[in-house]
Length: 259
Image 1 (cartoon, rainbow, N blue to C red):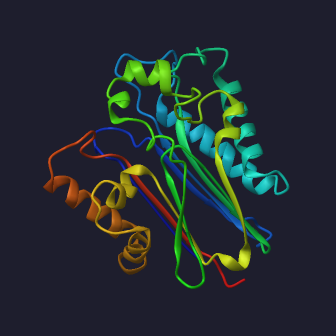
Image 2 (image 1 turned 45 degrees about the horizontal axis):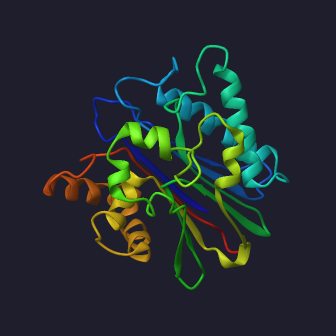
């Protein structure tokens, strides 16, 4: 098995709000990956004493442990438990009902000798490569279906769209949001590799249109995960900003052993 993980902040002067992990149980049977992209709140805060990196570290750590310690619980159940555990750790000090309480997108994948289970919540991406080289993106496309004008104001997003019916969903303090995640289960012999990308890395395809998802995996195979991030940074420097010029960029690539 080959694994590769790169996570780079969008601004060296600010902490990286992404989280990434790969867990390989001591049994040697299977493994898991977890990738979170913390949602940067507006400068006026959001009812919580803790930073977004604190939140993603707590939730990411909980999900990493749960994916390997509870092999019989499906990914949505693991996400629900991870959110509940994280919320409990700061419910006594913070207003978790505030729409800007710390939150994150989520990608999880867990593999065993028999199956590969996938979960995506919000706009990070999980790429699944089959043995014949076909690459399929597991995506939660709710944000894509919203009009751009609706996303231009933090106030509008927070009051009418974020974690609301008809809008989009992120992992914050409500465990029930796990039911909104996109989940896929595949036979193990149909998966050769998995690649998780936060939107700071997936913009090579989604924003800059430099290739499709298969091309993206090809870049990672030839140049490594860091090579993809380098390409994204070069494109960002060479084009006018639209939204964030630079964003935290995380890539986790796992090539599974032959089934």
